[in-house]
Length: 225
Image (cartoon, rainbow, N blue to C red; front, top):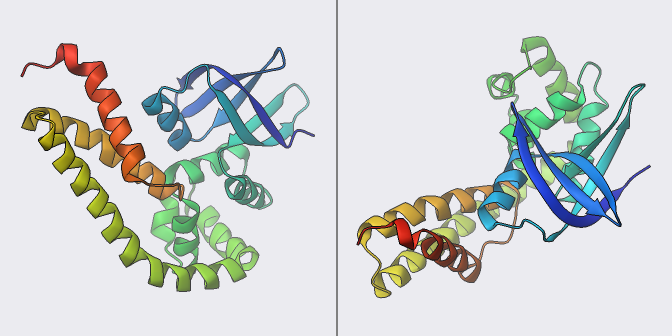
């Protein structure tokens, strides 16, 4: 049983609505299906050929072995819980985590928001009802904790993020980048911020500014000032 894999990132690709990477781990190439959010993070940060660690759910079938990789351990745990529900397969599980963060799914369960669950590709009304019923039982404690935590943290976190984005924009202006350049790069920064929020990642002024500068330097030859 494979619990996690750490190795050199060799290749990254998308097939339909599935996202994959290839890791070189001590001379063996592991093909792993990953979440779209991590796929976009790697592409944005240009992490090719860098060491990558993933929490793995190994599913063994008669004719193949499937590896599903997650950046965070709680994503793997949540994925396993989803698979324990009758009629829910691995691709439905990945579709759920591609569409929503764990907190968003838990909130949909807590509010019995069936329409939100049905919006996930491959999930109909009956499956949505079963997911809400069974996941509510499995995550009873998490539902209570998240409800209280979200009340306290949401306002503070939103204010903090908005301040960071504003500071980045002011910094770029002070460096004499054009309005066109700044507007273009802020779209990338906001998209990356949304990915980090969705996955409860670390959001800092330094990291986002570095991302902005890297993209501006990369595209400088194509920008008309």
